[in-house]
Structure formats: C-alpha cells, structure tokens
Amino acid sequence: MNRALKNERVYRAIPEVQKLGEFSVICTILIRTIRTGIFVVPAIVLKATGSVGASLLLWFLTPILAICALFVWLEMGLGVPKFPVLPKDRSGNVRPGPVKEVCTPRNGGEKNYLEHVYDIPRTATSCMYGMLFIILGNLSGNAIEFGVYVLQASYGTDTEGNIRTENSVGKVRGLAIACISSACLLHFTWRKGGIYMIDILAILKTILLIATMCIGFAASAGAKFTLDSSSPPYHGYRPVHGGTIDPITQQWSSNFDPSTSFKHASHSLSNYASSILYILHTFSGYVQPFYVLSEVKRPKATFTRSTTIAMSIVYVLFTLVNVAYLCAVTFNNRFRSSCNSGQYPCAPDMATGNNIVMTFTAARVKQELAKEGVIPFYQFFAASHRTPWSYLPAWIGGCKKDEQPEESPGPALLLHFAFVGILIGATSGTSIPTNYKLLVALYSYGIVLGVGFFVSLGLLWLRFRGTKFYFKIFGHHLREGNPLRDSREWTSDSKINSWVTLAAAILYVAATGFLIGALWIPPATGSPFKYDVEWYVTPVTCIGIVLLGLVYYFALTKLYAKYFKGGRKFHVSRSATLKHDQEDIQEKEEVLVEWLHKTGPKKKNFPINEDSEGDVGRESIEHIHNENGVELDEI
Image 1 (tube, rainbow, N blue to C red):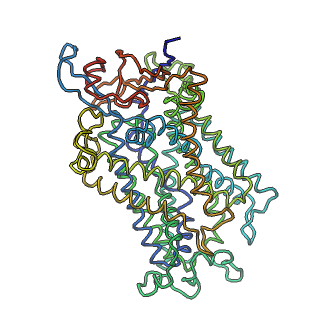
Image 2 (image 1 turned 90 degrees about the vertical axis):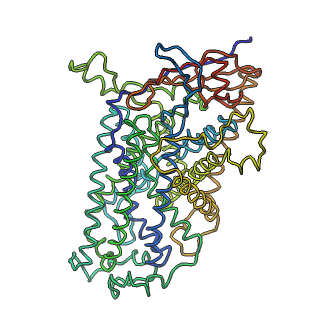
C-alpha cells in the first residue's frame, strides 16, 4: 500500500464584523489582570519582604518586566506565521521575481512563536507546549477562589478565618466546577455575549480598583471608618505587615520614611523570587489577546496601541493601589473586619471574570493545537460549530442570507473544561488554601516563567541568526543552502522600536532565567510561600509535564507510526488564502495532516508555507517558488 494517509481541512476566518475592536482588546487585558490578587498579593509581598520600601520597589520594578514581555510578544505576534506569496501581474498570472513574505496573525499565541523558532522538529515543540498548556493553561485556582468567596459571603467566617458551614471543602470545589461550567456554556452558546460580558466586567473591575485606591488616600487624609476597639480586629492579620509596621502606634507617613522603610528587609532570596513571581503573575494578563489574534480587527494597525494602553492603565492603577494600601495600613485590619460583607460580593465577580476571559482565549489555543494533529481525535477538537444563539435571528427573520453566523470552538471548550476538573480533582487531597496556592504556582512557573523564557530567548535567536558573530561561531558554510534566513530578513509589523524590543528580550530572558533557578531554593521558615506541599513540587511537576510531552512526541512519531501507520512519517502543512483589506488578512486556512512514506512527500501544487512540518524537512522559499509552484491570492 503506497498511498499516503492524509486529512485536509479548511478553516474559514471569522467575518470582520465579529472581530474584537480596540476597546475589547483593552478590556481583555484589564479583566484578566485586575483580579482579587491585587487585594491579596500586596499583603503577601509585604510579609515576604519584611519591608515597606522593598515591597514598593518590587511593585514598581516587576511590572517593567511584564511590559518587556509585552514588547517581545508584540514583535513575535505580528511577525509570525509568515506565508510566501508569489508575484503576479495585473492579469493574475505568476511572474518571475522575488517571493514576498507576508505575516497574517494567527490564534494560538506563544504556540506559534515557539514552533517558528524551535523546529526540532516542529511537532516536538507542539507536543511539549501542547502538553503543558492543555494541562495547566486554565485558571482552576481562580475557580477555587470563586468558591471560597461565595461561601464567605454567604456564611461568613469565624475568628480563625474558617467558613461557618459544614463540608465547606466539597462546596468550594462544587462551586469551582460550576464557575468554569458557566464560562464554557456562555462561550459555547453565544460568542458575542461572552465578549459583552468581558467588556462589562472589565469596566466594573476598573471602577472597583479606582474606588479602592480612593478609599486608601481618603484614609490618609483623615477620613474615618467604622472601628470597634473592643473586639480583636487584628486577629490573623498582623503578621502580613512583616513585623515592621504597628497598626496602632505607627502613623501611615512612617511607611514612607527612608530611615525606617527598609529597616527590617528580608535576606531570603527565595522570598524575593517568589514575590516577583506573584507580582509577575498578577500582570500576566497581557498575553490574553495574543491567543485570539486572528479575531482582532486590523491587528497590525491597532494591536500595539491597544495593548500598551491597557498595560499602562494597569501599571499606574496597581502602583497607586499599593501606595494607597500603605496609606491605610494603620486602620487596615479594622477596615477589613468591618467591610468584609461588602468585599466578598465583589470578589466572586472578579474571579468569574478571570475565568470567562481565560476560557474564551485558552479554548482557541487548544483548538490550534488540535489543528496540528498532535492530540487524539484532533479533527473533533479542531472544529468550530455554529452557536445556538446564532439561530435566533433566523427564527425571527432578521438574518441576512449572505451573513456568516458566529461559531464557537465547542469541542475545545469541552477539552478546557475537562482539564480544569482534572486539576481540581487531582489537588483535592490538599487544604483549600494550599490547593489555590499550588494551582497558581503551577501556572506561574510553567506558563508565565517557562514559556516566557523560551519565547524571549527565541526572539534573541532570530535577531542573532545571520550576524557576523553567528557565522563566526557556526561557520559561513551554513548559509549556503540553509533554509533558515538570517537576522536581517527577520521582520515584524510591531510598532515598537526594534532596539527597544531587543533590550526588552534580553532583560526578560535574564529575569525569567534567574527566577526559574531561584525558585529551586527552599523558602525560609515563616515565609508566606511555605505551605503544606513541598517546595520542589511546583518546578518538578512543570518540568515533568514538558518531558511527558516529549515522550508523547516519540510515542506518536515512532511507536504509533510503526505499529498503526505502516512506518509512515507524520507531516503537517498549513497554508492561507489571503486578501488585502487595509492590511493583509486571512480569508481561510488549509491544514493538511499526512502520514507519508519515509522517502518524503511528492512535489505537488499544494500551497506550502514556511511553517511546514520539519519531519520531512522545511522547504526554503526559493525551493517552493521554483519547484512547487505555490500560488496564494494576490495581495
């Protein structure tokens, strides 16, 4: 049997009218970034550093790392994938000339960036990243947090902070499952409704953050809040001040006194590394719109502006909230005690908003992974289906015949929901606080640090490749016949200056590399980052998941290929039909998943782009042009 086994699918781009505008892109970042963590993490960082000055310094400097990461993502997101387009004359016939490379942004975020750089082959990268993101690419920790806050608002807490209800652990996990179920059901039923919800909750969260900031500054100006000196309002809270602030005897102005603000700073490297990671995780919402980049209107013209505006808003507000927190620290514990009834109803809304936006974006990444053919039943999980809501206009007679109805990645949403449930169940043997901290730590170490390190390192490699230092190290002989282009041919449609992006990549590689190593140091006794689970569980688990992805790759391409596919080789090609509407956009994308004989694929007139699978050798642009006769739409 000599024929190849193949499956070709065509995926249409969503209509322009259904795409996210600049305001929705900003809201996507705001809703993911502004969450309950901003009200909790400052106290944790303050306790870990033991110093007001060190805490404020971390809150001022760490967001700069997040902005550096944003610049890296912008250059990669608006630079890959690239499609070769043959020159055509006015009549549409192919004419001699250089092949033009066009970038049309694709959903998937860092999946595309890692595959573009680390072609080892590309399927191995897809499997390792896919294993990590499918398992950890969710906010199961926030779902747990939602359950906790709902029960606290309903039943209240005792002096030990325990919820006043029986079987609170089971109820919390049940509410967590209900939270993620609602988010998945919303996006499955009504895509536009999910976007509306993201926009509305982002506005409400921003208003709440501004109100919190104003309360803190009002307190510093002498505003009075309900106080009850007869009760022990400080119970369980005094330790968060790191032992350097006495909320009874110290005035708030002493928090900013240079002679005392650094007086009792911690000397634990692990405490500082974990504090930076917590703050970096708080600012990690910038990645969300990159996961749905092909669903953004005119990304080359607007995306850089909208994302930088969103991160600037977050940076300013978070810095002011932390200053306001320290302005209010003299009454902060009593304020918490008397205002919990107002705080808890807001907290579930914040946790819900995080899960709504993460469900919307992460499902698209998992759909893109399915298109690569690297997960079981990939055809099922790669599909999009018409939403039930889209049938309503047809029922009432208001739907145009040529209007493309909205679709949602229903199977990918199911996959997302399944792994949230698995994570919540897998950590059920721990206490609720430990459960939450562990899930957040796994996401932070694996996705924020690990993926961030390799994406920024990949950008440095793209910039370095082809320079005189590259050829001095690797030799000029690599240039001739080498399909990898040099750094002078690397282009991106990002509006950020290339030298600024280069500096940002260097800084982010150094910072994430340091944190990845520093978090192998055990936390000090009394550290807020020391909990029931051993300190090494987080890094070992994340590395184990990535290695499991590598094992899966060998199982797929070696064992499965040998025993179920007759020894054929796995091969994936992706091509796009493009059109020019103010900027280059995709009309549709064709994905060809094949099992080929080891002799390689036959030369054929299938549109191959430079993202072609590496198992049978990535083809250079010149080779495609001269021998394969690739034809994509004229631009």
